[in-house]
Image 1 (cartoon, rainbow, N blue to C red):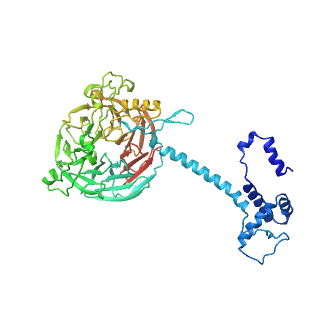
Image 2: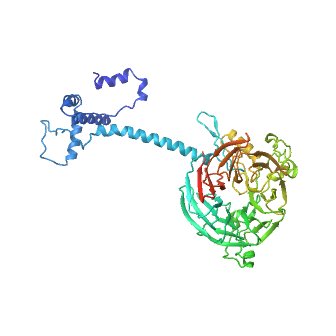
Amino acid sequence: RISTTTYETGLTLYLPIRISFIMVLTDKQRTDLHAGIYEYLLSRGPAFAATAEALAQADPEARSSNSSTDNSKTDGNDDEPSNSNGTSPRKTTPSSATPVLEKKWTAVPRLQKRVLELERQISSNQRIHAHRAGFSAGASSAPLDSTTASGGIRERRMLPRPPAQHSLQSHSSGITALALHPIYTLAASGSEDGTIKLWDHESGDYLRTLRGHTNVVTSVDFCPKGGGYLVSCSTDLSIKIWDVKDNFVCVRTLRGHDHTISCVRFVPPPLGAVFLEGGKIGSVEGGGAEAAAGGGASGTIDPAEAGAKFIVSASRDNTVKFWDLETGFCDHTIEDHSDWVRCIAVRAASAVVSKGGGGANAGGGAAGGEASDPASEGSGAGRSLASNLALVATSGNDRTIYVYDANDKRTKVAELRGHDHVVEALSFLCSSALPQKAKHATPSSKLANNANDATSNTWDYLASASRDRTVRLWTVANGGSCISVFRAHENWVRGVVLHPSGNHILSCGDDRSIRVFDVKANRCLRTIEDAHAHFVTAIAMHPTLPIMVSGGVDHVVKCWQLD
């Protein structure tokens, strides 16, 4: 056998290279180890007594250390017999008392298992929260590619995967509208039961119910700056604004439409809006159209706090109305549509200008429903005026999509035609509705260039969903044109979201599925069959957090994690 001295000498003399890979025990650690081995051998009974005695002779400190530990445990039991050397003999450990060495030995696999669990949890959290370091603060808030340990580029697709993380049930009728708070883990759902319910989409907890509408709630939307206000509309011909900070009190009710109000959105402000900097804060006590109509409660609404000065609504009376948040008056009415206006999409102004080109004027390329080549869409030499503007897109039963400048004169920017049935939903690039003033600089120039190129090509994208079972991708640059047509749904398409990256489109429909389309490959990339037990009527995605929510006729709101 190799003695301790010989073993240590061997380490020092013959294995000098391995010393850096072997943890050298200190004298105290070595003494504790020998004491633990001595205790273990004694606990095994007479068969190991001779081995324990040999260890004690080789290292007397093992016996003394073990004896001192025993004495401290007995706490003055003076009647316990002693050995000739004055130390208390170690009794055979009863089954209820486990030697220290055995405890430490069994703790090792438990700790190893715990380490593996924590590593898996870290890996999962890295995938879930990858957006926090990877999303650009620039124009599109698009997820950047992440750099792997090997130096390669790994794309974060952030696409929904089954099963649903949470199924939220409290509504007594079908879900008609969904909205996600821009900061908090808060989701709002509108329903045919006339209520708005608030949920924590991270924990799946029900928070509260907002009551005020007397009929179906058709649309909900949070204000872009801090989510301090929530706006909703209903078939009861009213628009209500709720103060999120003040316990969700209804601070204003707007009336002016002559028929069902289908959709409502906060209008993105223009670049350099003075009120966003706090230069125009004088809020006016509520009144206006509401007071004239004998409406409900009125309150103070600060456009600087809301990040928007107007809201826009669409109605079955064939009109689109812009409302002043400060006064409550209808500021402008658009009457271009010839039938029910069902949906609205808004886009913030951006300093990033598309390279444009490739599109036909006023929907010329889309009038026949033919898709143009995506590769040629950005080949033009001119700069697109539409890329600078905050935009509002509207559509409905007349199958035509109108795109307007959201500010000033609300001039028409594009007119898109191509759908063969009612247009149910519209979506610009999923991003913040606040003006985008600068591009985000990343440490890696390659990643920054990729993000900026994606921004310039996708900022003018507009997605539409229709009852003709198709999802179409348009560009609003240079008059507008249709880029791609996706035919995968087997029934009406009721909701659509243009992914923050601009590389994917998410849609839901009456075939009870949620589908993900690859824009570049022009194909259906992923299908979540039976996402709901009935028609899927609404879908919403957060521009930065990895969460998507969907609602259906089955009265359920589902939360989906993004991989």
